[in-house]
Amino acid sequence: MSSNSVGLKLLSLFCLTIKQNFIKALFLLAIALVPICLMSGCGASTEPVPSGTATGTIKVNGNVLKQGRVNFVSSTTGTGVYADLQEDGTYEMPNEIPVGDYRVYLTSPGLGDAPPSESGNPELKGALKDVSKKYQSEQKTDLHAVVKEGENTFDFDLKP
Image 1 (cartoon, rainbow, N blue to C red):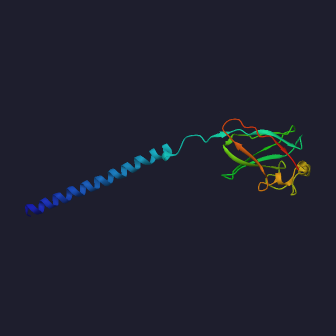
Image 2 (image 1 turned 60 degrees about the vertical axis):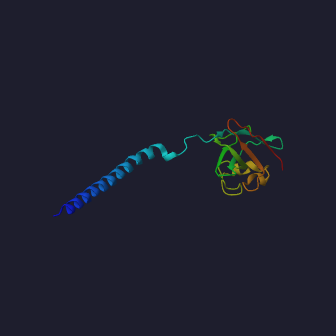
């Protein structure tokens, strides 16, 4: 064997060792980064979403509405929240809601999104008999609430 041949074999072996070690190093680096990304959320924001409370009173021609459900639906995300009216016409959303513009409409309590004419508790179906149909539809309502950070009060006096 010539010295050139031995030198080439040693060089080839050296390069192969470097290549294998490089691949191992990359593999170990990838394994080390996965838990770090999972624990850190891979850069996800940890800042809380600005939110506020929503309370108020619903009246019809100056008289408190004693039964009903007040629905807030976000104009941007389409998500919604609701609260049932108390005997004194007041409502309070159970949790803070993200700031933004909301469409506000009423439904009978316990019926969810079903219109009052559909099946449900007959006692509750009459709860909105004095409320204009436009206020009972998410699409037709002209009631809006702009929720800001902190406490918000939205009182509505509905007209026919």
